[in-house]
Amino acid sequence: MGLTVHRKKIVIIGGGTGLSTLLRGLKKFPLDITAIVTVADDGGSSGRLRDDYDIPPPGDVRNVLAALSDVEPLVEEMFQYRFAKSEELNGHSLGNLMLAALTSITGDFANAIREMSRVLKVHGKVLPAANQLVTLHAQYEDQTIISGESKIPTSGKRIEKVYITPPDVKPLPETLHTIREADIIAIGPGSLYTSILPNLLVKDIKEAIIRSKAKKVYICNLMTQAGETSNYTAFDHVKALIDHVGENFLDTILISKEEIPENVQYLYKQEKASPVKIDVDKLETLNLEVIKKDISVVHDGAVRHDAMEVAKWLVEYAK
Image (cartoon, rainbow, N blue to C red):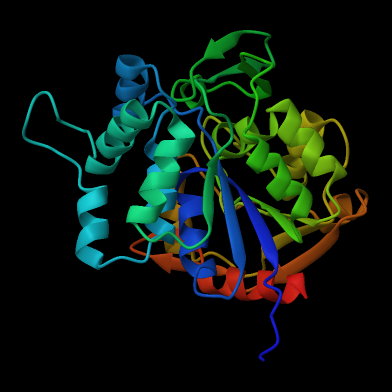
């Protein structure tokens, strides 16, 4: 009889393109993957379905399902297909509509994700941070408040904190169990205030992460984001995470050691974004292990995490 190989259990927490990009790399390794995905989105197709059907927004979940799927490229392309010519369907993606339909049929958003995962032959598990509607709010340094994930980056003011309503929203028991059993909890990359923190604002998730014996790593963003993290250093990103969780819960930060080409920086400057400055001395005051690796790649003028390089490092880190 062959030996049973214990697959390391890795939980990735986030949302947006950063999470999906990383998962495309991770699924190629023998890991037990769980993605915990934000449900605070309220823009575009997701926002319309959220309002029309009173369901959690499916967009971030859809992208993660596609990233972890193991189906013919054409099936994935169909799932991600966005309608453009019809007035009623304009802007909706087929995957969002399928998740909305399955939520209606099964009576439950988490069940819809489970069924869709089977159809798409998903590697690992995809769990929503909450199984109900959640609204994200931002309080700025001038004490004004804006509600709605899509509106938060548009104010141009510096964010002091974000919070969710209802404040006592409950995650799935399966989510908490998965966090407890994890070998590694990886947070990010992704929009700090609108993709990552909404997950950590779910009280039971936050407490489960604090108590978990897993190694906890923050995969630092490569670029700042206008309206969210303008002029933020790596330390500022970590400080925001710690402030919202309420204690220093991270063990390690993974950062890119590569210089971003000048021409690419220029393109980002037009969007009021710049490379995240790495202030190692300040990070080390938090007792963080600072890991610098070649983990960025430029594609079509956009700088992204190299999914395979980050995944390789996480596999090593899990040992």
